Length: 63
Image (cartoon, rainbow, N blue to C red; front, side):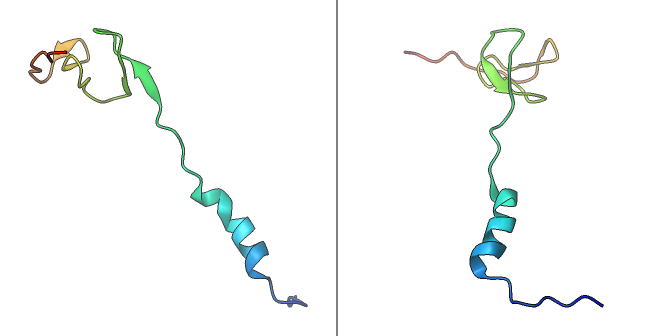
């Protein structure tokens, strides 16, 4: 059975594991109702619509 000749250093080990720690940006899709970017398969927090119907009531924000 094969046995490692040398111990794997912390640097090599961490380089190998480093790719798993990368954060991915969330996928954002435009809302069909108000055209704001929102996470896909979620209720739009700007207008409250999901699948072309109102899912939650959203009060208008004053600027």
